[in-house]
Amino acid sequence: MIDIQLTGLVKEFEVGKRILDGFSLQVEEGERVGLLGRNGAGKTTIFRMMTGQVDPDEGTVSIAPGKRLGLISQIPVYPQGYTVRDVLDTAFAPLHAMEKELADLAAKMADGDDPAVLARYDKLTAAFEAGGGYDAETRLSKVCNGLGIGEDMRSRPFSALSGGEKTRINLARLILEDTDILLLDEPTNHLDLNATEWLEGYLERFKGTVLAISHDRWFLDKVVRRVAEIQDGRAELYAGSYSFYVEEKERRYQERLKQYEKEQAKIAQLEQAAEELRLWAFKGNDKIYRRAKSMEKRIERLRTTDKPTKEKKLSTRFGEREFHGDEAMVVTELKKSFGPRTLFDHINLEVAGGERIALLGDNGAGKSTFIKIVMGEEAPDSGSIYLGPSIRVGYLPQIIHFDRPDRNLVDTMLYAQNCTTQEARDRLASFKFRGEDVFKQVSALSGGEQSRLRLCMLMDSRINLLILDEPTNHLDIDSREWIEEAVEEYGGNLLFVSHDRYFIEKFATRVWMLENGEIQDFHGSYSEFRAFRERQEQLKNAKTAPEPEKPKEDKPRRSGGTKELEKQVRAAERAVEKAEVRLDELAQAAEEAASDYLRLQEIYKEREAEEDQLAHLYAEWERLAAELEEAKG
Image 1 (tube, rainbow, N blue to C red):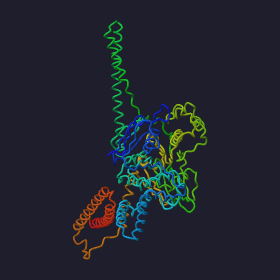
Image 2: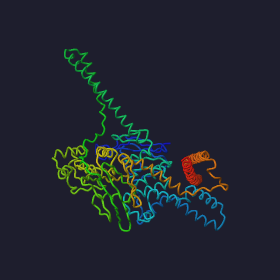
Image 3: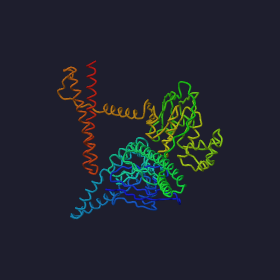
Image 4: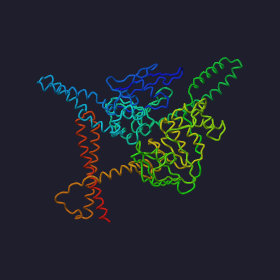
């Protein structure tokens, strides 16, 4: 069944400048499709057409009848005084209506036994239960916990929230509504890593259709199974994940380039032959003249193929300063609080030359505050941060500030850098500021463009410690990859805050995880850190699990020597494997029973029991393995 049918969409907001020029896309029920394209390509316009906010100049938009459509970026207007909890409760409006009718019916039944009232009550009770009426509060708590919406936030007025917080609440509301078609417009922009991973897990279990706009490449790889890229106002389709899209796009480019070069070689050959025919035709041979004209028409037909293009690679790099000394940075007993809340305390760290460190943690954990202390913009309550005498810092903050935003780009470069007008224009051009764009006021630039301008200015500085605070925020994928090129060429120390897991994985050789007022220091890549955390969680669960009850007649384990222990270890391993297989089966059963609430509850109960049993089996297996190791020793 087709959930979304977009056919021949055309839209122009300025005369002669078409954003969409015949865009067509068909999305089947249950598909996960990523909608890609540069900023301004028309992605959000397509979403607005689907929700009826914008009409296409040409073309049609069709949504399957009866399907509920939810757009994350579209935040409804709520009555004055609505709290976050009130907004979330709107997701249960149909259930609340049923609940009220059930109460009215119960009152009528107390007055007499009307068969019609009894029948209606029974039917409504079944519908209320099937719709999750008895489980609404549990569902709300799970979604709020997953997206980091605490009890304190739920009691706050919705109107007092920031734009990012409202977006997060709206996402929670859509999830609670069980919308059939989810339109996600940059859903991870205002989520920390934990909330993003929770959302990915939810979308894996979600049975409906997903159409997502995102610049988060890790998220796209986890969620989407097909990609539609807007190219020159039309859809270029790729039947695979984001990683497949990257490889396939390059393959198609090389294929088009090869075809273009082949055609150019053919044109050159035909032009030479046509020139010779024209020379012969001057001698009055009409037949040869006609052949020359025919060949010229053939050449014109071949010229219709444009040369394929792609974004140019970065042509400049950081002016690096040589590092001298043993330590680039030393953090000693660092503490910072705001009022009664302590962000971090007793932080002790050492950084050697050339390290690339990702500072991670939930929103509000204190990452940006830590960076500001390093930069001297905030004072610690106690402790200190020492930078080596040869360290020179380059800093790209999360919120870019220019002293004179009224200046144009060229003047900004001239006043800030020691360069000529031509050098300023050349540097700006290498950072994709070309033509009349260089005479724009800085204040007229988007957030991503301001980041790019600041990075352009940093490139001229001789630095050996580069500090980036959310460097890829508000950037499209092309701009993110472009900034990554700049960072990849840089060989000095790097300290960065980011929620972009693709960026983190590419650059981090060390991870600082800030949580619960402490920094966990891990030497390794982001993937290795994630694997380490998973092992730690498994060990923690195994240690906290209660010991299994011993049989009444507990024979000494060493009676059979190491052979008996080996037999017991193998038996424990088989029991663990059997339990893991059963958990996989239950996970599959949960997906298949997603629409059957009662069956789903039974599966969840069985899964919880099985997980407890698996924790016991892990503990028993580890104990036996340790005994065997000791016996062999």
